[in-house]
Image 1 (cartoon, helix red, strand yellow):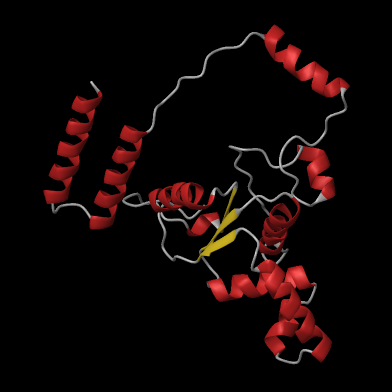
Image 2: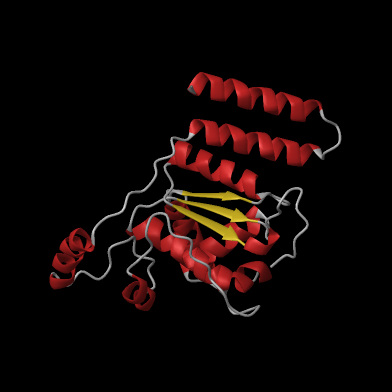
Length: 219
């Protein structure tokens, strides 16, 4: 059955590849989606009784467990949401200029330094060099604007050198691809997990992710 399914999918991809009516990017994205579906072993979740669910929940509440996931480094946030948990989609929402990117990079630094969890950062607006400067500035506690001004003091330059060597050992990867589609983002994320074992994916920012072949508003 699996062989027949793979052969059917292969034939469908071949037909679409020879069909010149659609854009090449959309065809490639659809082919990748079909391949991923063929490789994934879908497991249907089963219902669990409230008795069993409570038997798992109550002991943790009695033990005073608060933060179960990876700590973000933002204490108040961790107290409210219980840390960053595997499989969750977390959206940082605020008005422009309120520091959403800085907050996200702060979390990336914290989970790498204090939790040993690797991060893949997809920067769809800023180039990698800018993301790197922002990470280094935050880690060294030197405002990025001072780094851009080229008027750093000798002490600040020494601090940046020391912190850069430390930061170089952190499990952080940065991708600044422009015009990335949902399927490309998914494929790159899977690859980052396989190659580097990352536990956190950061996308800056979601409205810049494209949906191939679909006319949608950016929101």
